[in-house]
Image (cartoon, rainbow, N blue to C red):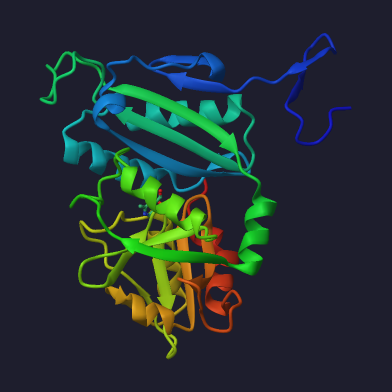
Length: 303
Ligand code: PLP
């Protein structure tokens, strides 16, 4: 009998062996521990690469179509060519999920401009894009437990470049922002622009519910990543007839909000109960955020 959660795979012979993680790297499925990229991969040297993170639920990809649409937009913006057709990419994503036996988790896809002698200018057209896909399980019970209490966020200045709508792997400001949050006992950081307006979180989109019941999230322009979860939540909000404003909101407005929450593919809808140490609403996850979290997958596309 194989214990739950134990990564042991019974062989046909009946003998058990540890189950190995598998990654896809440039055309090959390889053992995770052997998965390697070249030292002159431009993703590694220049962050010249884009990525996607897609939720896996019941072993299936959630919102694959929207993720691949966004991937194509990111690649197009950077003039990196699609390394294979969307259909083929979908096959690789599903294969990595299946080979790693992911039921609840995420799949990560990174596509870069490829390997070439170090020079910032684009390499010649003969250089093939690099492709890496990994997948891992996420503990849904732990995320649900977090959602039941809500999370704390802290604000940090938004010091990112002007095209954060492109999902590049150039995430150093996000890395530093998340660590600032952790150092201050919070879980997420919200970026605030020079005008004092919240743009988004380090790895999430930011939302508030005002005291008169309006949902507010920043409009999708070059200053935020257009989250797939954000798009699905917008559909849910419209479908449920809730009052909505897509506009920037200030930190001060957020402090006074009735509710706050964040959205992302791995956290779905996560209530925020403290911002910069100030209690939001009654300090508990709000009704709107909780309902959106509960009903989210009715609006998402199952693979
Ligand atoms: N904003 C940023 C900066 C992110 O990194 C992410 C996710 O990685 C999001 C928003 C949420 O996007 P999605 O809902 O597609 O996961």
